Length: 323
Image (spheres, rainbow, N blue to C red):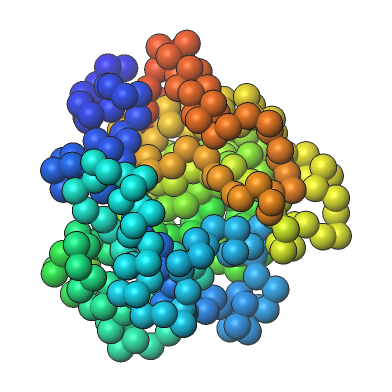
């Protein structure tokens, strides 16, 4: 059992491979992200795959006021930096984060220009780009490969689930196999891969949600962001059903699910987030009544109580599993 811990000494303390430990190793100190919007659309909103968007999506719930596509990337960054430097005074630099919608949904020439602009922002140590697993045709992959050769580049995929029924219920319009192909294609081109995953959903047994950690590890992701399912104003989930009808788990239940997920996640995978955090005025459910830091501490408390840590139950492909 201790063999899993030995794969990544950084996991021993803290109990999971935190972004802070990764930043120390990769950049020499803490870094933060500056969210920018290059004005891309999304295939489930612009008619390519649909027009209604994903069931849970309300992009305004996560967009800072400085992230405006009518401004250049440099202007967005410069407007955001004073607040962020104040919040992260010990940081040695930042990453430009192309977050809203699908930043590979468009001509490769446009993506290439955006990556060049993002990388040219003064003080930037790299670029993070958010997209969907089914929006990575070969010409786009070639642009990303060139970008990764020039400097730090991480592509974050909205995987959301490894369970087909859940993906259908979320109206994602892509499959888990699409995600696996995208992860493999990016890694083959030397591009770091992050995956966004939603836990605590009503469509998937908890045991199956936890198994997703093993599947993502086997697929080869470099990082994950865990989110709990939230009902936000402006999302399709907010109507026609009342928020309480979704049967979302309480915060202690979510903490147990997240802890079990971490146990089965490869210890080398960076865990960039343990839960979501939407603005209070947009959040309809679940309204837990405790701060996010309390939930994070509960996740770690569950691990400590079990003498466990990230990767404790992880098995390499081909090894027998106790799951």
